[in-house]
Length: 430
Image: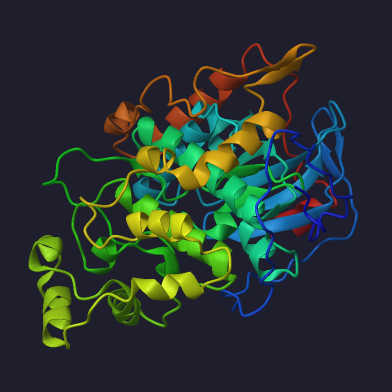
């Protein structure tokens, strides 16, 4: 496997080592027909300048991402010369909700230990607590994301799709086993390198799964194109199955090189879903709000039209469409889990490719390849969010976060901190 271009990384592509025992599938290219999602803000300030840190100088290469919850720059760590990503989390202490959300994301980034999930390499040293307003996190630098790959002329073979989908589900199984819902799985939040390694990122909307169905959860989650029908219909409580729906939408997008359900509003989104899946039975809408249920029942009865999925591309084989149909199920209780999806025959070749050439859990010796006992390991423990119960004010939150960062750095490498007097600082904070 080889990605022909690195998009905007400026670095040469790397070829995946050949697997002598692997039978490659027929390759098919479908580069056209994809409509872009709303564009990100322009990437300003890419001029090379020096950003001074406490222990050295970092050269910010370029801004590589903007989001609702921060900005990410490509920088060089002065301690070892390694290129890394620096994420700034601004406006942390505007209110208690924001404070809890940022602390949750920060703790998750430090909790994760998985090759297909982005984690924190370091956290920059905070100033005195009275001046503490922003958080800076260093993570591994990835070359691009899956959205950029899909809309590019880069050919996507069946091998590419299987390896990407396998890694997405492998990372998702880890998150769900830790009790974490991502709640914003989309191509732009799946980082990739030219050697096809993939990591799930952006946990700004992630939260711990709520076991009590009487506890209400927000519907302001997941980018609309990838939003599960139960969320679109105002369900007050949902499970990890919303992430599986999102992965199903991405799977179809990889096959067809276009967004599967591209609507202008949540109602239209729901209509497009029922156009494909058919009118759902009443039990599947039991948790929906009255307005959404009435909207569907007042419309004409729609039969399923799942056979159109075979028209996505030549790569939409019987096995591919079978797995896709297990993911895109209207009733979340009947939707396949991320863990069970990994057992589907469609992913056998993706698993073999990943663990033969790409993973860190298996290794080669002169006599052959030594494979790990568990190809898709779960988290070693659930992610705890008990700390949130002690956060009753913004100031308490600030103290907890400041203490967490300070303790996280103890006994580790020489700490780094931002110098606001640097010539690049104003460019960085824009």
